Image: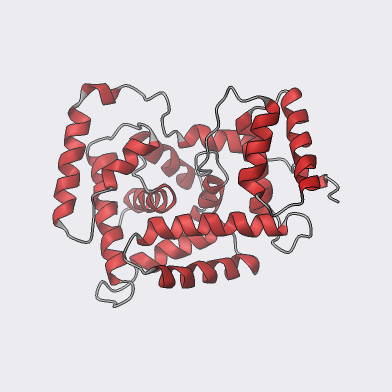
Amino acid sequence: MPLLIKQQTSILQLILAMFNAPPGTSNLNYLTVQLNNGQALESLAQSLAQTILFFDKQYDVNLSPIDFSAALTRDLFGNRLSHKNQALIIDYMVNKISAGSSQVELIVEFVSVLSSVSTSDSNWGEAALHYNRHNVTKFIDHLLGDTFTAENKAVVIEFILTQMKAGKTFGAMIVWGIRTLVNVDLDNPVWGNAAKLFNHRVEVAKYHSIDRNGVVTDLATLQQILSGVTVNSETIMIAKAAIDTLQDNSCTRIQHLNAFRLDEALKNKKQDSDLSSAQELRFA
């Protein structure tokens, strides 16, 4: 397989597994360049997992600093920190906003903290484990769809969490999951239907992002493209016909206001890549 096709296929698979959507042509081209420049797929997956786009919460930009900080703290930590320590984090966020930090910068900062600290950390560990479990569950749901029972998904999720606790990155386990699936025998009684479904979704994503030069709209629209794809191969043609209709609509040629821009998300992540001072907070 030529290198470009191999790289494009890897990106199609990665974005499907992480975001449940085709990447669109501009994202595909941008991420392929990253691989061509030497970034490992595992590293790219890890970087994407720490972006605002992978964090599946949105906040009203008009929220006051205290209301936004309280909402983000609640979503990230829930009851996994004492009220006193939650108040400490909220104060930290409010002070950062007063100093000029944006909502996006704070989200990326705390997502990076939870992605990097050990689950055995006395301060952040319980919240990090909760965050890891949430992300792994989302990834497995995207990867396997409805082809696995909840019980069998739970086995895979626990295996991945165990590997992460032993030192593997989430990005490395994402790539492991994808490669495990694409290399499985389609007649495998456990994994076979999942492999068929994933192959069908990759074919539709390729049609959208390569064959039809699919524009990048909002994530929900991109996800809708794949929503009807099943293990039944006839659903591939139905999805492709829907893509044709979408692409032929001249309105979709206009860049969407809330476009699924992975290049911008990765740039935001890089700008906040330094060790967070939040990790120096003295918890009670």
